[in-house]
Image (cartoon, rainbow, N blue to C red; front, side, top):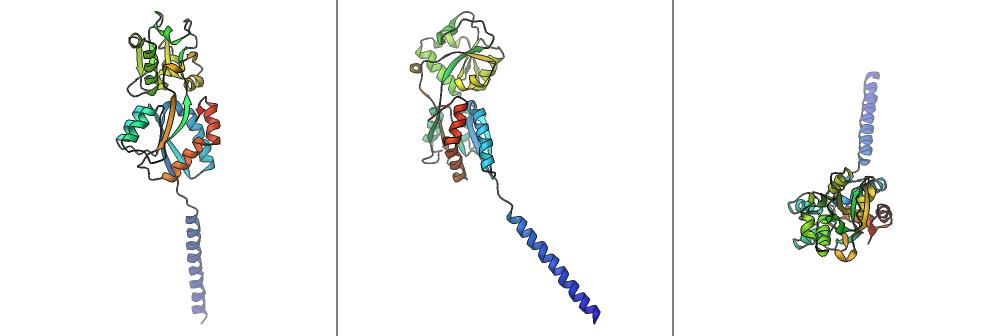
Length: 264
């Protein structure tokens, strides 16, 4: 009789271990949380500010991971048109956002003007050239001018508008070296590969390799506005909207202003 009783209690013990194991596995599984990955395409000039904001946001929202693609606004626009997996887009000009909106690629009611910037003329930090205004790039000592490619880079479009309104665009283009983004133009100036360049004030401010000659007169170009919008094809509208609200809110504003942007 003792042997069957022993077997009976042994069976209960095994069942208890199995039940306990299943219970702990169930408990452990409840702790697993899904990470939301937001794909954000943003103008290259926003790189430093956006990375800092995303780091702060992820600390406050540990289930969200912000993945960036920084490039010229025109290149980002083309990628979105070709179906790239993008949840949010922030352009350095209205043109690219306008084109996407006309094609019905923006989520309704999500477009918002986020930031404003300035266009500046810069030279290498150790430059001895006597330049005081945009027209001075025509001086003989200026052999090469770094500009953004006007077909796809907003800062290049602003530069073309400025020089056209000053009546010197054709002469400037004979000296122009066109970059694929504002950061490339900045790197050329910092390295002394060009005598002058046209970039945003925020880009000039993050680098110690250049000095600002002047800000472009406001009447020579359209305001440099950065619109943002959520892309219609996103599968995570609510998380994207929450991040957009954070960018435009108090914390985002504080960081953007730190980097020289004006928040709309």
